[in-house]
Image 1 (tube, rainbow, N blue to C red):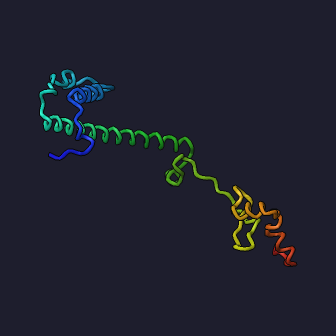
Image 2: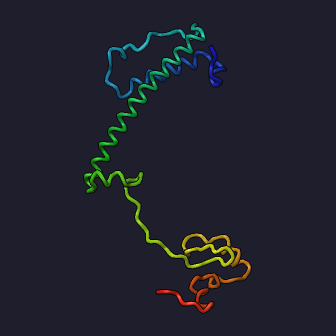
Length: 165
């Protein structure tokens, strides 16, 4: 039997005994007592078990945990869906609007389109004047030019052109 690399170094039966004990406390938490859980396991001598038996026990525990985690996840998703529906009703959204919002639940505010105010004469790149200055503008300012030299309105007036209104 070929084992995955992370299990090739066996850390001893004490490690597995602790894992089994942790698992048993995990399944006993926040659960109503079962007859099956009253005497969850007989004391197993993990030291006497063969490596294959220990590996089989590990696989069984992993399978049980994955099933329980999946069912718990489904339950939590169902509860979250119910809570989101309640929030949408309180907020006045109908079902059509509820699907259009972002992950935070609110739709993003629409901003008007901003026209560019500055143009790079060599590459015709533009900048609206909002946010971080583009590299071409920073480099030009460092060489001694002024921002007014790159204004789109100023360039049109200096060439004798009129802007349409």
